[in-house]
Image: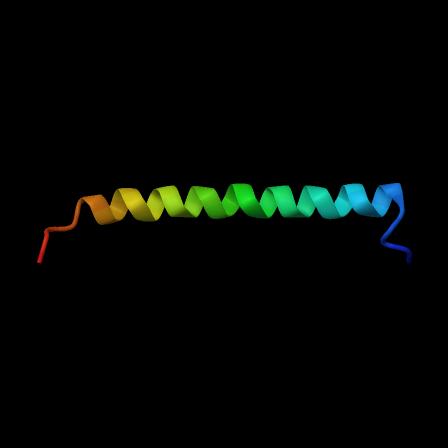
Length: 40
């Protein structure tokens, strides 16, 4: 399997983009949950 073909590069780019979107979603959820915590 060759990764440096156009199909392999497109698949790798899709995986990276999905990972970034899901990581950003987690950061937003954690930020919203932390905003409701009392200051200690």
